[in-house]
Every structure is written in structure tokens, then in C-alpha cells.
Amino acid sequence: MPKFLFYSGTAFCLFLALSSAAVALHDLQSGASAFVAIGGDATPRAAWAVVVALLAGVSAAAIFLRMAALVAARNLFAAFMSVFAVTASLASLVWLVMLQSRMLILVRDGAPSTLLRPLEEMHLASTLMLAFFLSLTLLGLRPYFRVQASRFLSALVFFPLPLVLLIVVQELFVTASAAPLPANTPALVVLYGVLSVLFFSITVHCVRHRYLFIEMTNLRELLDAPRRTIGGVAFDS
Image (tube, rainbow, N blue to C red; front, side):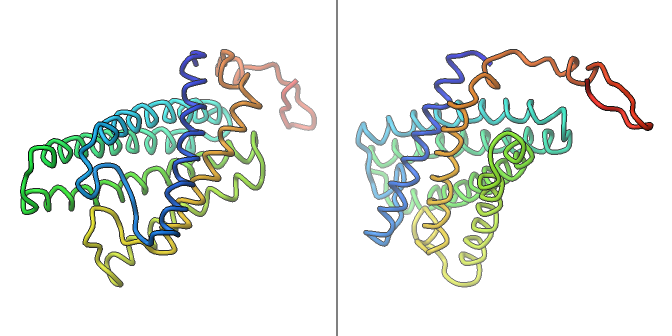
């Protein structure tokens, strides 16, 4: 992958790690979730946050796609599932930020709350959809993390998806959120904390193994590498 895309993706992964940690700390202190375009914030800072979120998502998606390409030679199913999940996550993110931009415009124009309420409900559903597909992306890349990273990272990718499902169950059966985000629960705080650790670990992994992302990889050479047979079993030479 291009060096500019790799370094920008690594930087944005670190940005996502710090942002997730900041949101988790904010939720612990204030008891309420904070997000872009929430609470009538129509300042230029919120508009720039929407743009940065889109750039961060595209850059991080490029890193994940490179990981999926590297794992394709070992686990083709995991590679295909990762590509699907990354594509769905990016589509969910684009829809989410476009919805936020529309909400910012309406808030800036002084739109009544009755007009914003349907958009807030769609914002809640879009946030949960993004969290689900992001969790599925991390779970699909587990074979890559198990081989190239560490056992700790390969085990940590199991946690986001159950936490997202727990938040959905709480929204359905326990408490319904009146805000454009899920109600602040321990599961949501833990999810932000896990995502922070995961993105920070991915940043460190990308920096330490940048040759895996920058150098050219020919999958045909990996599959057609010279082999030697011992006892009827083929081994790579």
C-alpha cells in the first residue's frame, strides 16, 4: 500500500484510540455519552469533527484491507469476511457522518425538535450498525492477529461484538435511550475502553511491522512457492 496511506492510517488509528479513551473517561465522569452533532452543538469544531471522522474511517479501513490481503493466503474465508465487514463499516460510517452533517445544518438553521427527532432515531440505529460491523471486522481479522501480532490482541477482538449485542439487548428490553446514542451503560464504557486498547495495539503493531504494509506482496508467489515432499506431506522450502 502507498506510504502516505499507511502512515495516515496509522496516525488515525492512534487518534481513534485516544478518542475512544477520552469518551470512556467522559462517560465515567459525567454519566452521559458524548458524540458529534449531539446536544445542539453546531459550532465549526463539530463540523470539522465530522470531516475528521470520515478521513479517519477511510484511513483505518485501508489498514484493515491490507491485513485482510495478508491473511488471504492462510485463511481465505476470514479474508473475504473481513473485506465484507470493512466495506459495510465504511458504508455505515459514510451514512452516519452524512446524517450528522444534515443534523448540524438543521440545528444551525434553528429547526424545531420535532424535525430533529426522526434524524436522532436514525442516528442511533446508524451508530449501532457501525459498532456491529466494526466489531465483525476485528473478529474477522483474528487469524491475522493470531499469526502476526500477539495472543493478547487475538483474544481481545472477541469482546467488542458481545458488548455491542449486549447494548442492543439493553436498548430492547431494559431501557430505551431518549438520546441519539445508546443509554450510558457499563457495557458502553467497556466497549469504548476495549476499542481504545485495540486501536492503540494496532497502531503499535503497524509501526513495528510496517514492512508488511509498505512492501509489495505477491500472493501468487506465496501460493506457488517451491515445495518439497516428505512422507507424502508438502512443505514450503
